[in-house]
Amino acid sequence: MAIYLDNQATTRVDPAVIAAMLPLMETQYANPGSSSHAAGRLVGEWVDDAIAKMANHFNADSDELIVTSGATESNNLALFGVALHPKQKRRTIVSLVTEHQALLDPLARLEKSGFEVIRLPVRQCGDPGTGMVDLDRIADAIDEKTALVSVMLANNEIGTVQPISEIAKICQRFCVPLHTDASQAVGRIPIDIQSLGVDLVSFSAHKFYGPKGIGGLIVRQSPNPVQLQPQILGGGQQQNLRSGTLNSVGIIGMAKAMEIGTRNRVSEMATQEQLRNLLWLLLNEQIDGLVLNGPELTLEKRLANNLNVGFPKVEGQSLMLAVPDLAVSSGSACTSAEPHPSHVLLGIGLSIDQARSSLRFGLGRFTTEAEIRMAADWLGKAHAKLASFAA
Image (cartoon, rainbow, N blue to C red; front, side, top):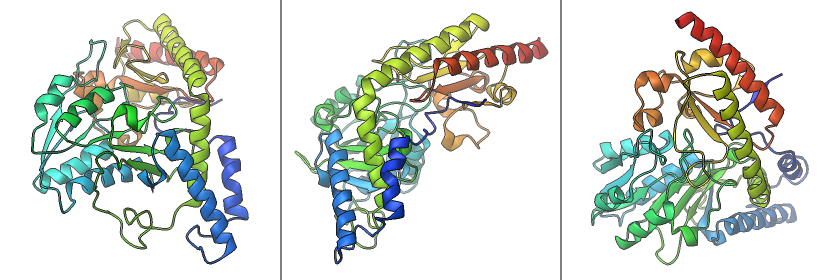
């Protein structure tokens, strides 16, 4: 029996999402841009309706949602689009040391081209709000040279939920747009761009039970329109901001996934929080000296489905190999091929050895209590065996 607890990396496509996508692969497969015939117009109408419904989930207008291949492309479009716009005169970007690599790598590219990038530290391990940025640091970092502030809504490794609405108020005082990577938050945290005050929001469908290869970028147009330099040129689709034939299959699937996630969010998060806390309790019953990496286990500070644990006397990779039927991770899926320890865990003050001894657990919609109990049992036995070798 295999148990999947890596839902921060990706999620299973919901059966209802698959059902919604099938007609667009089997019978209604016309190009949504082919308005010269009925088949194309029908798919185009479906796509327009799906985009309108998804935008509504963010309290945004349809023309404020740009469909992309996923959050990595969305982050690139947000950063390069703002920074490289012909009218952009400001040359400083503010972000955090614990951001996803899909943001940090574009920032490094901009830095090499002459931009100043300020990577702010976050609260260190042991703090109830581990991983959060202090608002005073944001305020001190922004000035008349700041082109953009980018802060992840919820961290993919330690689950930290940032005070985005408060950060937005600071940005607004300085007339600086705020971007947030909300990949881990959609379907788990309400995202209303009006109340949050954010200007750009990135997300990926595969993080909330939709298909891979599809995502979006919300680009707020009021009260202060965000101007972007397009990064993909071609047919002029999506207001010339992101050319290319629209992925009608992915769009319909993403819209269905978002609909389900929004409808069931409260009950799902309550269930996943209970199971996450049960996993933490069971692990502590079997293993002495466990360390909770990240903020305290409250919904205000941490994603309900996230648990990141430091195991004493063993490396996380060794522990994963000892339980091959359990899918967990030692960091971001996008950097799992790298031998380096997690930059997020190092960013909250863990040593290299502590970071390497840690595992991330991401619970999901299809996780059961039986799986949690079995996973904890497997880990307890595997840890005891590995720790005995180190004694």
